[in-house]
Length: 352
Image (tube, rainbow, N blue to C red):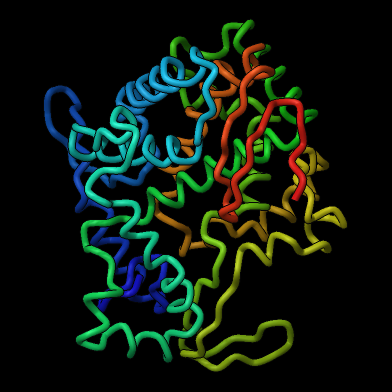
């Protein structure tokens, strides 16, 4: 984000973005075998990601095993946000390289991969908002070594884990929502509509209330809550009756857009999954202004991988832990998105 070559999400020019998508998609290799012949596909296509479902399942089972033996069985508090983050790193690296980082088993980050990025995350927000001011500073020979993140790091893992942490946080804050969600998962499980030992992605999509909880989490707590700058295409354009010349930098913030009461209702500040189960016209309007992964051709190319990992993990955790009686006796420490920490117990509501 702060380097000489901006990441895809920060590219302003549409032409440059299209070129980068064409180059980036096939280059990071997730190999698949079809009839014994290696095929190199776009790693971010859902059809390709599904071919790695068994690998994702292995990581989910490993993470839930560690959580069960180290915390649930012992009745010990758990910093769930950290384990979610480590789980995502392990999963992505195993999908790409065939071997995970080992963070979940070790119970800590490896080689400073996470802390190194978080060290400059605030700076990244400033670059997005004030590039004309911040970029010259970070490219100064002396400041560059102090401020720049390592090239080995990919921020996609952090945005995915932010989504997953926010989901669990919202569910535990709202007992009635948690109860309805678990009832739906249990019902699908009893009816034989969830695979064992890990639900398949296509099965998670079939649960309407679960999907509404996922959408509402991304609406209220978007993983990238900062402006996403773009440049107006040649020829300019009208926006709300105002003329915007070409090459003008414009930007939007999903955190702000998703709180528009004219679109999402007077209760836009509330976590309310039911809003996504309303009449079709209302849902279509909300989807039009849904900006969690960007918009149109500029949507995040890793969005399918993010929801694939997250939804399978959510169903597993909700089915194994949140619905069990032991959760009435032990606490779970959740590092919530705004960096506050709280000891949560199912059935209680956190106060701000």
